Length: 430
Image (spheres, rainbow, N blue to C red):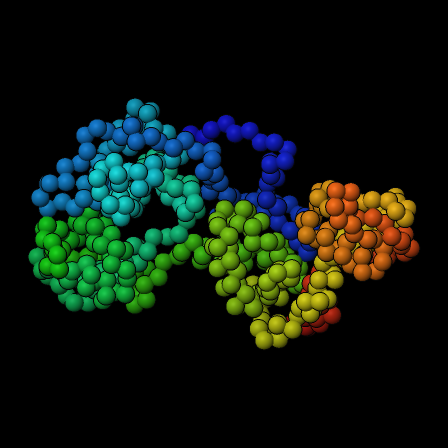
């Protein structure tokens, strides 16, 4: 249940747009149909817009942790599922309400945070909640088919397949004991906690049984021989992760909207469009970069398209490294537009001795950062057009009025245009 939030003109933000070569084009979400864009089905949840459930809303009767043969996280998971079912039925709970912090819930139940984490992962697999880093865990209707938050595919699924393959490879018989969770984790190459979650899942679907043993003793016994689905038979355990999805979406975005030499949007803009974190976009961009589809460089350069994902490799990754102009030239490109504008402003609106507006005012007027204005003014200062004075009555003053010539329209580039011409020519010969 979302709160009504007020936004001032200063804090309100526009919907994310996809930039092509420095210019604005239609938002990606408007361009693609719902079937073609996986991002369309996901909601953008803001932590500040969500109601957090208070601990007083939980049942007074807590799980009985003294029950034999039951784990604490399993008992907590069942307790939470019963509470969510009852709350949704009686309309005491709504979808997208934010669960309490795990530490607070752990203190309320008298267990560790790790135990609560395991219980929440279990009920998330059952469809009762969804969680995402930097937001938290939100309630969802377990009967709903669609997933609201775009997130990473559980690593537990990979461990489940690996354990199934282990059982079949070892030809374990019904009633036979499995190795301990820690030993199984070592065998299948998974984290112990992830392995235990996988075992809990297999227990829930009736493949194995927990007989309540503790310590290093084997407490999991085979109840039914598992069957592998067609996509689980292969030796390599694979499942599509969020990075795989975003990599695919980025390729489709480049294929549909960009040409060789076009500059891609910032990671922040792509993250807003694809409804994922900046880190996820970064990881997916690294993959696309390694395939020679784009070339990226830190700082003011950005990422540029080298080829369409559907096209053959036009140049080697080593050759792509020479695409970018030197940093000194790139800096000139980036601030040249602001510098030219300021020269025109000074020539048309001021005389020697006049004080220029503040850097923040110029930044707001031009839609750039104060740092960009500062560096452009520094260059004008080096050319003798402005001087800087400190103190209460200081600022930036006109020292000389520049003579401005009309120039051709300027394109924001950090990439060598001659290189792009040669690669486009190579593409046309294909």
